[in-house]
Length: 400
Image 1 (cartoon, rainbow, N blue to C red):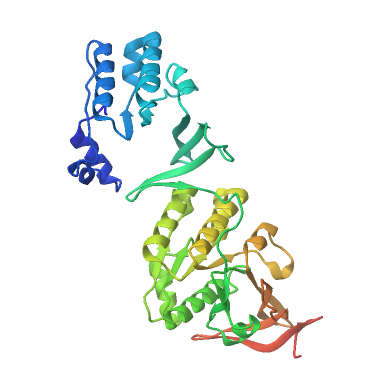
Image 2: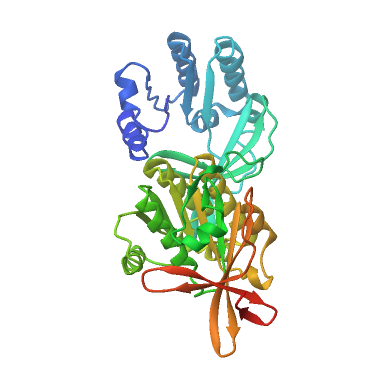
């Protein structure tokens, strides 16, 4: 039932956000009543009750109750709501969704009595987040279950509503040691005893310019060669730039690339885009390049929660995830939170050998794998990456 718009307008609005209710109406599964306000609000209230009694629906949505309750005044509103709920809908086991409008600055819904009648209250808010529109859903009451979290960001997309559920509980999903992805670098595969386990979360960390993105793209190249479907998410480069770099590395196969800027997206918006692409493209491996920008823009706590949530969502779907970070773990700097996300932690760094700057690599962590723990020299050439038989001694890079 709508007190605000005709059926044609409503169905068109829903279709624009990916909700096709017209087909349900054609099948007789949805009935729509437009009830324009009458001079006597009691006549309209009686009409609502009459329709519910006649139709006996499983679910009833009233959009919006606010003008009717305002027209009835407080006493009559209380009588109408009590009669509708206690004499009509609850005895018939009808689930009711009543939409109400909250004036800006108000902390009370309607007259306040609505909150006592309801079994659950969900409050939707629209505000500004660094100049961006942010939508928030708060569960203020739910009689049938305890609430461990009150507020969630959400987005209205072409596929409907997507709620951003930050990681707050136990990890689900697992990696598979019996199936491994090649890194495209034979020596690194040996250091990892065969490659990256399927479904693992891998963090490649190191200072700017050390080769993190090149290594990530080399992993993508190997994934394409084995027939996989990689997805590349970047916060630092354009799609065109990533494709150009990929071609210089000899990557011939096509793979999906998303270029995003956190500056114009809320955390829930970024989550919505990433989840939508994972569910529609169904990649076997995801690279998220440049998470340092996410941490810097959203703040470390919010940024880490977002990265952790996306990584665990990928793991739940059996997708291997590669994250690149600016933290120089080989020099001892880094975030413990980032390390706990990783199943495999690969550190890249620079070391000075007399007048020569060399790049080095080490596997710092690999759950379930007895991995090579040495710091080795890594060499980036035009069409390949190699790890030399050199390791770090007390005074720098030396032959073993």
